[in-house]
Amino acid sequence: DSGVTQTPKHLITATGQRVTLRCSPRSGDLSVYWYQQSLDQGLQFLIQYYNGEERAKGNILERFSAQQFPDLHSELNLSSLELGDSALYFCASSGSGTGWDTQYFGPGTRLTVL
Amino acid sequence: AQSVTQLGSHVSVSEGALVLLRCNYSSSVPPYLFWYVQYPNQGLQLLLKYTTGATLVKGINGFEAEFKKSETSFHLTKPSAHMSDAAEYFCAVSVGTNFGNEKLTFGTGTRLTIIP
Image (tube, rainbow over all chains, first blue to last red; front, side):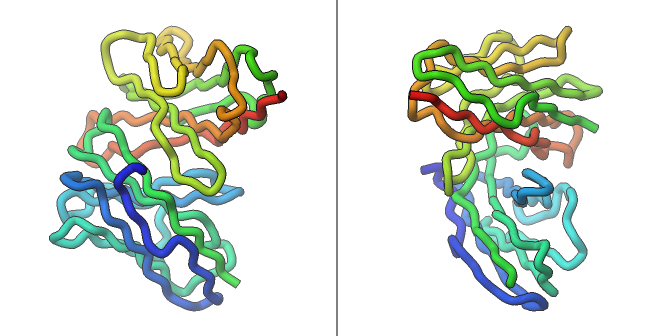
């Protein structure tokens, strides 16, 4: 158990819909990362937050957005969903957000878009 | 920008044999290197990491990796494979010297199968 929690574990929805994925980081960790894992793209970095502020953006679509709240939990919002958005979405957290700091991964949310 | 290449998307070894999973990286600045393991339907678990100092890094479950700057490699090894090692293994690189550049860039993964 990494200490990072993600809800829900599974999500099945239809094209065009909007969903919210939630992540609670390990106690004391200030930095949260979101990654997408799919068969065709592999593991891709989406976005990073540090202590409530956006710190880095990766291959995140404009239809996707995220935020980190004062209690440090984070939400990833996916809207106007397409079939290609079906993937495993991971949240990771680290203490300092520096490059050498270990990122601890949650169990993931499996999104299926029908 | 940094990148990672994992040679061999599938590797099969016999139980008790040497495990060698290959990883080469590309980075314009000194890298931080990581190996993660993913068991079916689970998240990623850190096996080991190299940041600075000793180039031979020991991790959990008997795995180790050696950072070779001249070869830009960070291969993962285990002397004797166990059935429980069957999983997918990911090599990742971070640079982290610049604010906002701490993300992990992953390789495409190597699926390790252990033959009884």
